[in-house]
Amino acid sequence: MEREQVIRIERGRPVICNREVLLRIVETAE
Image (tube, one colour):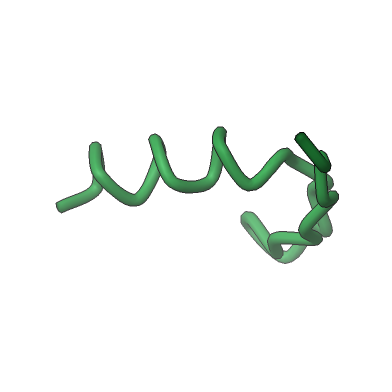
């Protein structure tokens, strides 16, 4: 499985997280 690093801007600061982590954050946000 390929782990792609996505850069997410949080509080004006770029944060590098895994796609799986971002998906979990999105699900929690919703």
